[in-house]
Image (cartoon, rainbow, N blue to C red; front, side, top):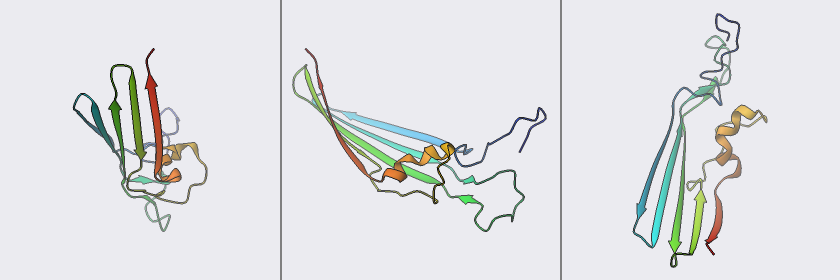
Length: 122
């Protein structure tokens, strides 16, 4: 799809969904902190410039991913952080073909992942 200047428009395509949101909340008790993030990527089309009915499956539905982490403080100089990305183990919404526009679904490619981090101040 091109605009009046001839530039290609990708709005509404996979990777450029019109509807996107990220909601974050943190509960901090001083020695512990619990962080949660929900990423919402709205429905998107494989090619927004195609007429309706061109493809049997024109796009992907809304995609939601939940990430969480827990940070524990031991004094003023030591913090350990436990992370879980893609808590619900949501997979890819479609078979990926390797396009960089599809990076918005990275959590689905890797599935649920765990990591641990340590911060030490000296």
